[in-house]
Length: 115
Image (cartoon, rainbow, N blue to C red; front, side):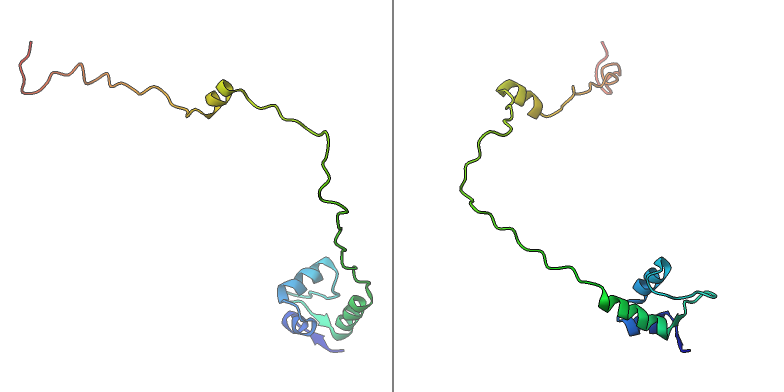
């Protein structure tokens, strides 16, 4: 019985080692982890490849062609447009009052006359 580590199994399956590890954890690829490393039997890898070969493939999706593209559709959703003043109020920039500095008026000016 020949065994392979994770990187050797990935080379045999033509997959990335992370993909092989993820599929082994999920139980898709038969393998064992007796310690810190994954171990794969050669027979199990061959069986996995045979299962992939026998699985039916999905058929290619057909493009749906429209019968007519110039048909006018009637009805549907009509949106109410906001009025001019309502729209202006919504689009106006949000500004607040400019803050006033109350401390400058209470200090005496330097170098000038005091009254």
